Image (cartoon, rainbow, N blue to C red; front, side):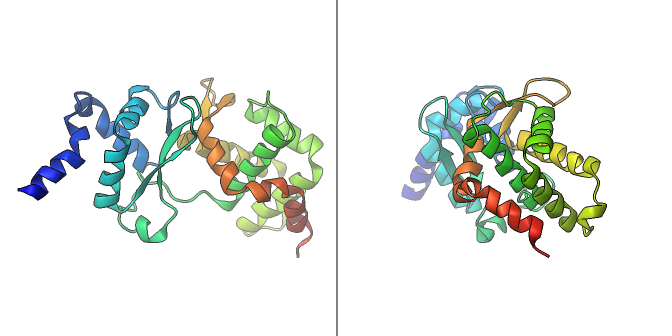
Length: 226
């Protein structure tokens, strides 16, 4: 009886009057790799529900899926929640179908790092368009562009000299598409070209902070390595 009582207390978030309408969407979103924050995704009640039951939800995902429900950010406007899939032992506990996020491609990570360099380090705080990012990269970041070309070409098994600008542009568009799916950016137009930077993009910055600070050296290595 004590175990049953303890479980009822542990998962009492299911008794929340909003649970029936919102928990399935929260669960699907988290296991799809989406970062849930106050402004995205909608409805905002998803974020509020996790705020109310964070500890109980941590227990739920740990006990049933061996996954960590984690939090980033401290303030209400910068806070975000996500499931940590980075432990390979944990990832084996959930189905490997299309609903569950895989790791980002290396090229996408580098594109994200380049964006963070421009946006954060180089103070292009008005950078809110994929087209503007591409134009800035191609016209003012020659070494970074060359390194990205080589990285993308190598990942596709091509020679960098044979890889066309339109192909790398498509890779950039695909990368930002993934950032949108993760909730790192929020699209502000129907064509998915303009976006708003979301707090959860900070997760990439924190994970690769030293590499972003030294990304010039990183891309030089990509460019000149044989």
